[in-house]
Length: 375
Image (tube, rainbow, N blue to C red; front, side, top):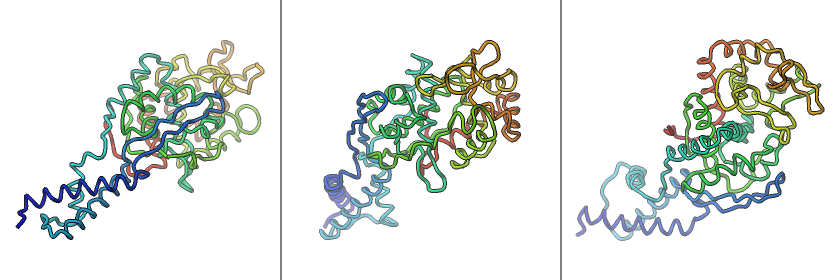
């Protein structure tokens, strides 16, 4: 006669054996492969480190399968098991204490990202750009693109015009962080880098969720052209630019207010002629998150830059700052201009609205994410 305690020990053994067999039989569900990325822009090879943790969905399915296998084995052997309200309760009870899935310390990950920015503040804006572009391919109509798969690490997506320079900058900078933290996905890393960078540059703490699972290959990479252009139609700002901006952002599910709020990220960084063709910073404080983008946009006189590069604007006689046609069109379009004025006058409203919009951006195309403390 096997008592309750003994039966549970035997069941635990069966569970262990079943788990081992399941892992042996289904490695494809659990582990991703090392892949080498070749950047067309740099002709250098980048190692795409593998995600060696169990993906949450695969893990859950695997736990259920092994639990059922163990229950079946126990039944064949005539072992009496403790009673549970349902099979799912039993699986939940055992999987809760299972050590088959690694736990990522996201605060430690955020600390490592922050250290990179503290070492070189100019890395901050580029990390925001990486996070933005990893999400900005989303199309709500067919649920393609977005941040869910970390696809921007693949050479195919890095070769898109809007991603020029990211392979040798933010993607390369963050790879050692990825390698250091077992269980971390590139998709989570890139989006976390965005909110960490904003916070490090004196911006708000933006809620972030984890649980994105890296794609194993580049089959899900969307076609080039989903990110907004700096100019559309005739040279310089005109109604076609407003139409273009709305087409891009409406496709993702953003309204005019959210478009203007997200545009405030141009308070950070600068354009590099060798990447985009455009040149110069939007503000005199390119490593500080603030509402200066709106105050400068509304208070300075912006004139076309006299140069051989693509059409852009500079601030009158000094020419030290610049705006793109899609920036200046925010002043020309009445619906956009309304929100430019709001954010120019009220920094806190901008911080609040930007935080909501940026979180929405980073969660496009995802499901089953979990709110995660990172600071």
